Amino acid sequence: MVRKTGLIAALDTQDPAQATAWAQAVAPSAGAIKLGLEFAYAAGFQAVADVAGSAPLFLDLKLHDIPNTVSSAIRALSYLRPKMLTLHASGGRAMLEAARKACDEAFPAHARPALLAVTVLTSLDDQALAETGITDGARAQVLRLGKLAIDAGIDGLVCSAHELAPLRDTLGDKPLLVTPGIRPAGSAAGDQKRIMTPTQARDAGADWIVVGRPITQAADPAQAAAAIAAELAA
Ligand SMILES: O=c1ccn([C@@H]2O[C@H](COP(=O)(O)O)[C@@H](O)[C@H]2O)c(=O)[nH]1
Image (cartoon, rainbow, N blue to C red; front, side, top):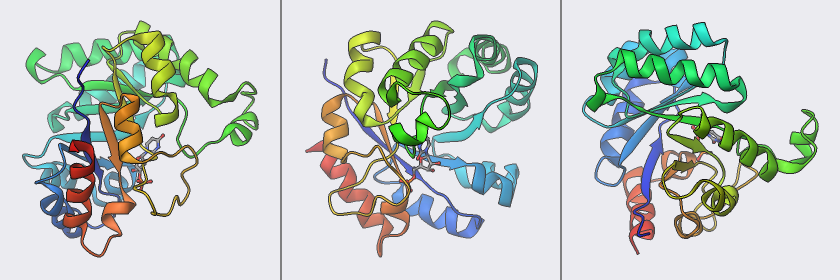
């Protein structure tokens, strides 16, 4: 299957003016912008709506609560019209099914966001994961949670690029697979542990890569985003 891997630019800041400037800088190169916890908590949801404007929005709120609360939250945020919305797969089947039902009811069919279940955060390696009680490694846990989420009606997964091949083997081509933890060659990993380059993630089967600091902390964010998009298209 020929897959076109897109770029989501993660605009992690507390400053609406900064987010707006970055959104404009990456617009020619990114298929979507990510706004998440830091920006929403600092600037508020009206600012999320303002910055997203006409840009497709990856709303990375990582919802994780009891089914009733997650459903209500989805209904409450539906006015933001995100293209993609995240929740934690570890919330369990009932939460995942409730989220899907809430989306079906709260959005018109043509505007329903893709629900993406976060499997294992890309900042966790096997050792850190073992401290949470999961002792058979990130790959096994991603596959377990990935199967659960897709079975519960979720559209796709957030995982590291390292799990793309086994997920495709197990779940096929249909689920959207979105990979943060992407680092262009030579850029600092920071707190990310399970990382790959844009080319490696594309070749492993990512639908979208999420890139934040390598773009936003670059001297020229527009150029950094353009270089990543060009690498994906090469
Ligand atoms: O497992 C996950 C889930 C979400 N993220 C988000 O992606 C970006 C990555 O930013 P970088 O600066 O490129 O590290 C960030 O907004 C995270 O909240 C993730 O990294 N890992």
